[in-house]
Length: 351
Image: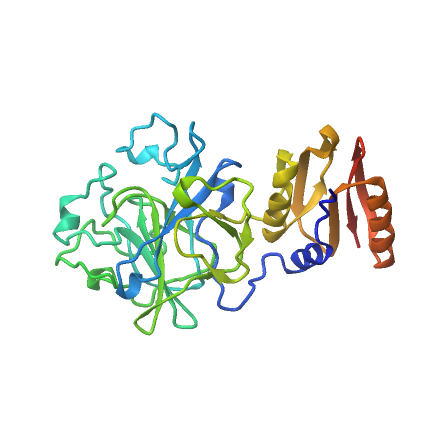
């Protein structure tokens, strides 16, 4: 079967890489860079009403010995230890650009997953723990919560106390966490590291947005998702690109975007290659090498930052390759590189 990559999408991705799909789209707060290539992020609906109605709780997951997705670093890891969780210590990226209007940076970590510091219960540690509230230029507030003690930079958070003087259990900006004339941060900027502080039952990143005292959806410009029913989602997806849409409800896997850089991904199966192509192109990359092996069953790839229009196809027969080459040449593309493995061809064209 010819598994040709859709030409229109290849050019579209190449020309819009790292540009928000819409002016209101946010950046996903975690990066694929920080995970093993076979790991993903997983989200669930937080619920809770009011401003948290559309909130999400995010962890990192890998496959365990039974083939299911788990948030622990190994099958025999101590589930009470914060460091046993894949997401613990991962960089948190600002979802939107704007000014810091609320934050906390020195709240103690909850000692173990499944427990809470006594001062969380009595309100002297805020529900968000170490956190950052950002007010965007359009009036949207974005919360990033439960960071590790001391990892929210002092340069963006002026509060040095460990606990509140007066207890507060508000889900809004606590009075003592409010910031006046806060610094401006840029979407994608690292603003802390995922932890287990505040009203948290284990290491995770809690995010939500609000505007005009109402919870609002969080549209993300890049990344893709697939349902994760019973933690058994196949790695092959199907993966649906977000492209400015909000995360679906329910338990899902999230393939967060990679940072634009130089990447090598080898041993990609034929069944997984389309997903990898879409993921890397959506992350602002273009293929430099996509040689096939084992009669087209495996691909070893190199990716570089996207510059200008390009096209790529894989799984082609000799006839497919000749047809595509003629078609793309007529469109002004030049054959950049091509490979063969038995009867199968893969190739890249650029302008």
